[in-house]
Length: 399
Ligand code: FES
Ligand SMILES: [Fe+2]
Image (tube, rainbow, N blue to C red; front, side):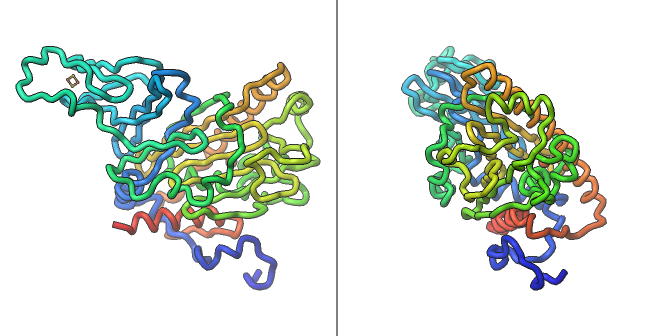
């Protein structure tokens, strides 16, 4: 059908994004991948977790950024302040912390025992007299820029970030105000090393077009329906480098027996909400039969939000054709056995869906790697995919 002949959705983004096919090269070229590492991952704000992972004084977690070989310690000191440091001992460069998370008053290097506190200060140097020029007060763990948004911990590995975190979050900064992120807790987490480019991984969560096919067994009618058989997105908003949409729920969804049972007790990731007023921070698109919101934050962070829960996806490039894909489901603490069961159902359902996505994106990468295609074709429903490639390319082309 001719582009002008039918009523189009999301055409308000044509001027910015165009309608041309999108090049495959960014997903298979090693040179492009190197530029992404240098011009994106070493320069911009990256989400590495949520403050609820720092439970209590002197807690910490370590996060690796594999494509640039960085390892960062994020700490919460005894005053509650969150800090970030390169996970590198300043004596001779040893990887300082080798556990992933915990609570510790001191970090002691396993090589020669140099000791640091949660504020990164160098406290102790064994055999200190043997260092004729050492100024302990001036040495300490190398700081990394860190800031929080709704409890999400972001770091920036550039010594002088070009933007603050609020500047970089653009119009999204206040858009989710009121959602109870800080009262939520981790319900389940899965991590996979997927043989696909990080953008190919991110693409699948940016459209509803694949749901009727990839999730035809696991989610045959929860987000697609007779009225919306192809999972059309109700609206798409662009917030600078970030993008946002919603997925509809199906009011005539036919639940499985397990689903039907838990839905009687509490909301799941499959339902929207029947409350007259949608809770704060949700349904940004004012969608009828709303299911959940999806925000994709540049460069590699997906945030799905529903009533009382949120799911995060982080896509960490390892190589041009390999990604560490972390998915976490967070929810308000269950208050009843029914809510507990409902949460377990959501955790299992999320895991099943994500496994199907893992398998799918690996097949896409195989196809792209053949070199048979120079470009891919994107529909109006894949406008968020188009936006991602444009924003990434803009950064890659900025020296
Ligand atoms: S490298 Fe850490 S104490 Fe020597
Ligand atoms: Fe999917």
